[in-house]
Every structure is written in structure tokens, then in C-alpha cells.
Image 1 (cartoon, rainbow, N blue to C red):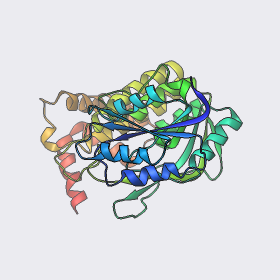
Image 2 (image 1 turned 90 degrees about the horizontal axis):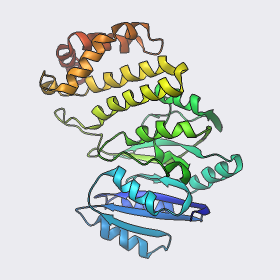
Image 3 (image 1 turned 60 degrees about the vertical axis):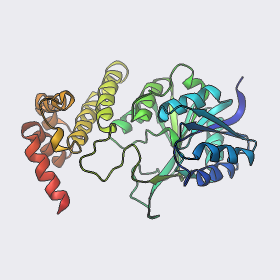
Image 4 (image 1 turned 135 degrees about the vertical axis):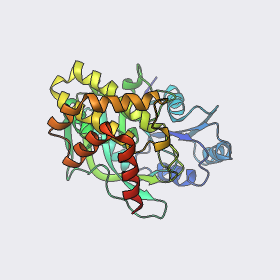
Length: 329
């Protein structure tokens, strides 16, 4: 049975001994006291699992689960199966939150009878420097219908992260996070949005993303190619189908999204992998060539976006070498 007004916060844990105490401390300080913290040790190879058990001994609201390594999605899904709360929150184990975050989210959800509420976020780098906002927070509380929220996502102005959201547990009864994939939040969010009448977005930047190299999406090695760049293209195709079925008025925005995701892929794939043996790369290249007219006619792409998309469809290796040279300069 779900406990009304209880919030279950799920924290996947994998080799984060340095950051886990700060994350958990920020959750223990929450002013919304009716809260449980589920630490899911995803097969850590350091002592993160033992540290999680130690932290649980300090607060009865903490429960710890251990599993073989399977990735963030599988850890979150295990947490969902064990959660008792009416509402679910997620926090990455190297991030941290402000004390009033869940109080603000829960009060809004209960007052407005909403299935999903979102707080704003900022990003901090390894040196403690605040980075430019990825998602600009609204000046005051904002309410978006699902169609409006979807449009913001397609224009890369919306926040797809579940870490900034408080979500009613009923939404996860039929859907979970896709295991074995990255960009998993976007995958699930666009599916759930069809069952969410509206989302409230709060202006307070109470969620702090710790931007560190060595995570799934961040690398300094030019020859590394994180899986996320292929998954964002796959998700662009998935959302295209959802838009065709449920939001046909957003098809121009969906086309822009699909083109932009492929631009991101082409600007990150190592030149050494741009060859005819790489089937996925060839599909992306051919897509750009087949959609030249859509590139030219899109009202949502910048002039620079269009130039790169057209050139990458025509002479991708040459463009990438030139792009890499410009980055070094």
C-alpha cells in the first residue's frame, strides 16, 4: 500500500564514496519530514555499498538495497519496486539538493492536485564554479499543459531529468526506465507525458547537478564516444512517432529535434568511426542527406545549425576535421 504524503527518494549508488555523504546529508535535511531514502547499490566495486549501510544506521528513513551492476535504469527500477511513497523523487548520488526542495514540490503537487511537479536546477563543476544554466528557470511558478511541455523538450528548452521532478507513483505502475540505455529520462518522460494533464515548474534552483568527468556522458578523450550520443538519436525517432500519434501539431518541432540530435551525434563521433562499416553512422549521414529540404525550411534551426547539417550530410569527415581544428584553436 502506498503511504499518502510520503515521498520516496531513489538514489542509485555506484562507486561514489567521495560524494554520497553530501548527497544523503542534503536529503536528511529536508524540511518535508515524511520521506524515505532508498539507496540502491548497483554493484559498486569500491566501498560505496558499505558506506550506504553505515549511513542507514544513522537515520531510520534510509533503506539500502544491493544488486549486481546493471546501470542507473535498473537501479531506479528496483527502487520503484520497493518504494512506499505516494510520490517519487530521484537524486543522482553525486548531486545534492536544498533543504526545502521536496517541501516546495510536495505542497504544489497537493495544492494543485498534480501528477508531476518540477523544480529548477543549476550545475556546478569539479572546481565549485557555477556553469551556465542548461534550462533557464521561470521567474515565477509556471504551469504547462503536456503539449506545451513536450514542445519545450523538442526545442531543447525543457528539462527532461526526473531528478528535478516529483512524480506520482501511479505513473510508474505500467512504465519503468529502459535498461541498458542512456538518455533514459527523456525516453520515459515523453511516454508518461501523455498521461500528465499539466506540469508545474517552480523557479527555485534547489537541485544542484555536480558536473564531473568520468560519468556516462562526460569525457575529455576525443576518441571516446559515449553511448548517450547514439541513444539520443534513437530517442528522437521514438518521440517522432509519439508526436505523430498524439501531438501532430508539433511535427515541425519534432523534425527540428531529430535533426538537432543527429547534429549532436555527428559533432561528437570520432572521425576514426566515420566509415562504411559503422552502420549507425551511415544511417545518420543518409538521414541528413535525405532531409536537406527540411533543414532549409525549418523555422527552429539557427543559420549555423543549418550550415553544419548541410555540410555534415555532404562531406562529414572533412567538416569534422575542420570542426576539431577550430575547437583546438
